[in-house]
Structures are given as structure tokens and as C-alpha cells.
Length: 277
Image 1 (cartoon, rainbow, N blue to C red):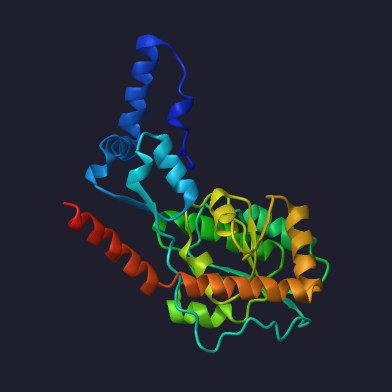
Image 2 (image 1 turned 90 degrees about the vertical axis):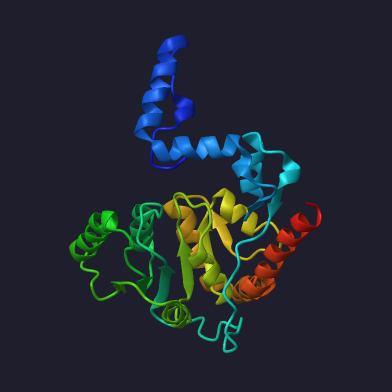
């Protein structure tokens, strides 16, 4: 409901002209946010608004968009490769291979990740499949690399740098447990790529992950605490039936939300508008 990483406009206090002035200053300093609110008030000049998840529909309806204008079209997933299988053919492999994919960015809880790795009581390796997209994130990348060096994890903690989608899919196939430890996230193409690869996913509780898990359970959703994440890793590690369930449901979700299906959904939405115009 609010932009992450900045002081929320709704928290501005004051009365009369004092509050009015503070809001004007805020809008001047945050032009993107101000423009977004103007587009929202104008209903984006659209006949139909598509969002990916129910929680997003709740946000825009709560800001004045009529519910009938808003349609949910889930974020598409890449087509699962033919070689994929939901079976966990190497459940007892050592070391435990943990990982995540995507751009290094401030919306991932790296402090929670490092705390979790410290608390795991068996050999492990971790692979971040990806790199930075913006130069502004280089300082974060350097801080992560410094932490890895300080803890002498160079031989078991890897940040690969940018990779193509095909390369990411190949590397994902080697991940035992995918750690989606988000602090904020509206949607995530990398998380859906992990679903298409039928990985065992542990994700922090967010409106996004709650909506993805609203039908068949496709991931374990936990609180953003070290104890909960470590407990979930142990549970996945010990329970073969749970691994099978998560993998099967993840793959089924991916197969039902391919780009081809979502493209048809989008086309149908345009056709309905054209037929009624």
C-alpha cells in the first residue's frame, strides 16, 4: 500500500496549512510517487486494469478504483523444461545446496540469509544466481562480498553475476532449497522461475507469497525470523513426502500459468473491451 524504502506520505502529521505544506514538499521530493497517485485518481485512463494478484486488486480498489474495472491476471511462468521432474532424486546429498535467483537488490533480507546460514548445523553451500542491474546496487553487492570474506565463506557462498534465463534454469536444477527471503516484493519473475523448476521453496510471509500459496501449497511460507527459516529447512530436508508435494504443486502451478496462457488471457481482455466499445 506504500512505496517501500521511503517515509510514507500517509504518515505525515499536522493540521491545516502545516500539513498541506508538508504534503507539497513531500510531493516535490517524490515526483514518481506523486505522479502515481495522479494516475490512480484518473483510473489510469483505462477501461480495464490488470493486476497480478488478489492483494494488488485490494490495494487499487482501496484507493478508489471500482472493483469491476480490475481483473486479476497472474504473473506468467516460463515453460517448465521437458527434463524437469518433481522427484527429489538426491534428498541426502551433501552439502545441502541452498540458493536464490534474481538481481541483487535491497528488497531481499540478506541479514536474515546470513543469520540463517550461521545457524544451519550441517554442511551447506549457497548460490545467488544473478548480479546487479543498477549501479546504485553496487555498494550492496560489495557489502555482501565483504561479509562473505569476513566469514571465510568464499568456498561455499557464490554470487554468479548476471546470467541468461536459460543459464539460470540450468543452475536452478542444482538447488535443493530455494530461499525467497524477501523484505518487500510486489511480484517476482525469479520466484516464478523457481516454481517452474519445481524447487522446494521457503519464502517469507508477504501478501505476494500468501496469494501464491492460497490454492495448493507451492512453497513453505514462514515468518521473517532465523528460527522459522532454519526450522523450515530442516523440515524440508527430513520429509520426502513434503518435498514431493511442494515440487508437484509448484510444477502444476507453472504449467497452468505459462506465458502462452497469460498472453491469451491478455488478448481476451482486449477483445472484450473492443466488443463493448
